[in-house]
Length: 73
Image (cartoon, rainbow, N blue to C red; front, side, top):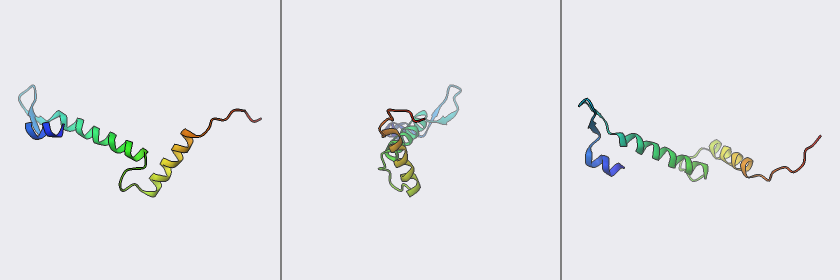
């Protein structure tokens, strides 16, 4: 996507002939956000704070913990 934007430029003409941001700019941004979220969830993102790493570990334990088999009364 970024290569296409470099070829076509940051702006394109819209249906009214006015300059507008290239639509692939938003798509590229969303892709980077998704990739970073995936890296963070795996604990692989650079500059991850200790609180963020701790939260990711707690969430991972919660979702991957063995299920309870009986009910307590």
